[in-house]
Structure formats: C-alpha cells, structure tokens
Amino acid sequence: MKKIITIILLLISGLDIYAQDDLLSMLPDDNASIPVTGTFKATRIISGQSIETVAGHHLEYRVSHRFGPINSGSYQLYGLDQGYIYMGFEYGISDNLMVGLGRSSEQKMLNLFTKMRILKQKTEGGTPISITLMGEAYADMLRYPTEDSRTNLSKYSYMAQALIARKINEKLSLQIMPTFLYRNRNNVHGETNEVISMGIAGRYKFTKRTALVGEYYYVLPNQINTKYKDALSFGFDIETGGHVFSLHFTNSTGMITKQFLAETVDSWADGGVHFGFNLGRSFGLGKKYKGQYKVPVK
Image 1 (cartoon, helix red, strand yellow):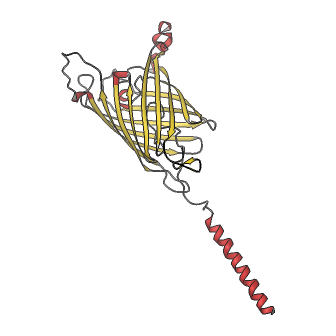
Image 2: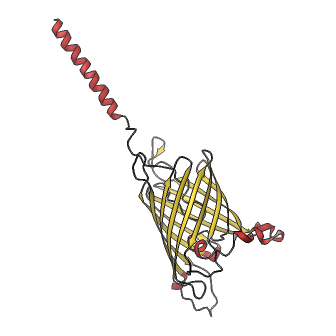
Image 3: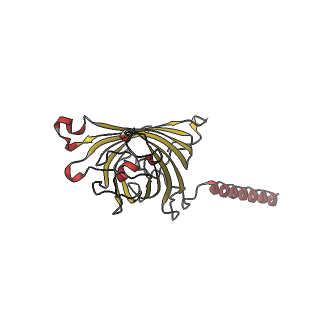
C-alpha cells in the first residue's frame, strides 16, 4: 500500500512540474525582438512625411495651414492676414500600406501618394532601423493665359522617396529622407527637370503627449534657381486623444513635397518665416471585436 501511495505522489508531483513548465513556456520571452512603435506620432513630421502609416482600415482627415511671412509687417498683421491651406484624406489599406489624396490652395495643386513600410525596427538586437517607401504624383490645376506654351502634360510632376528612421530611445527619434523629384516642366529657365535632395528630421519627446520636432531639406547644387532656399522647419506636437495637433514655424509656404522642396522662396535670415499648424483626425472603419477594432489605433 505504501508503494502505491508513493507512486501516486510521484506522478502528481511530476504532473505539477510539467504543468508549471508548460505555463511558463506560454509567457513572452523578455529577450525576444519586438517591433518598435511610436517613432513618430503622425504620418507627417511638419511639411514632410514620417515613416508612420495610417492604421489598417482607418481613414485620416488632415488639414494643414500656413500664414504669411512674419516680415510682411503690421499692415498684414505679421502674416496672420494671409493664409494657405492643404486638405487631404489618407486611408490605411493595411498596417503597412496606405494611400492619400489632397489639395493645396497654393498653385491649386492636387497630390496623390502611397506609402509602404518594408522594414520595422525591432528591440533586443533585431532590425536597427525602419524603412518606408513613398511615391507621389502632382497635378498643377492653375489656369494659365492662352499665350502660355505649357501643355497639360507639363503640369504633372512625380516624386520618389525613402524614409529611413531609428528610435534612439524613448525620447529621441531621427529620420533621413533621400528624395528624387521629376518635373515635366521646371519653373525657371535653366533649371533641371530632376531635383535630388536629402532631408533630415528629428523628434524629441518632452512628456507623454508633447514633443519638439524639426526637419531640414538640402537640395543638391545646380538644380534649382538660386532664388529658391532650402526648407527648414521647427514645430511642437501635442497629442490629444484621437489626433495630433502640431504648431510650427517654417520658411516654406508649400505643404507638399514638390512645393517646399524646390519652390521655397523665403529665408529665415530675413524674417521670411511662416507660422502654421497641422491637424489630423483618424476614424476607424474596420469591424469591431469585443468593443475594439481588429486593427488597433497606433
């Protein structure tokens, strides 16, 4: 009888150890690489794009506004009497693929673009960077005088861009943006149709919901007229619930890549600085499961 009881106790203890091991195997491995999130809090940094994409089955409505230059003086209320606006819709086909359509009051320009994440930064010795590819097309909708020689085809331009970023730590994120722009017709005689530039941007998080952002685009020499300047911008992001509100100062009037990259005429040096803001609001269009969207909001 004692032998039987001993065997039963051994079996119970063995099953208990096995059960504990089985449960422990279900716990996440602290050393496993996981994707890094929140490198930037919006699809835009200021004027330019970030590596972030709209979450799958979500629609984002975006508004950007720029006032006139501060050096316009008191008669123009230091630029506040003037204004330019961009409105657009962006849709997440999946978590890694989105499309967007927008219109800028500057040049009455339409833009259509797509962004695709091809690489995500991971923790614990995983992938060190994130990469998102972007392609964009533009259509100038201005009405030109009948004596103007430009054709409908000359109103179109195209852009390809790689967005490469790394979240250094919980506070600091950096991004570079090699960019190629092709214009069917350039704006000034003697310019090239192709414009190659390199952008750099960063984000420094102060609190859970606020951050300082900045971006600069350097255009390689001998491509655009010397009257055009490199775009330099600084801003302050405020995250409030379902949207990010960004206040910024920039020397660029244009709010899409073709405009601020190759058509910025104002300079920080002489006070040609514009105050502006960006606002994006996301709406979930996916089916709900237990009160939550299948694709979580970022």
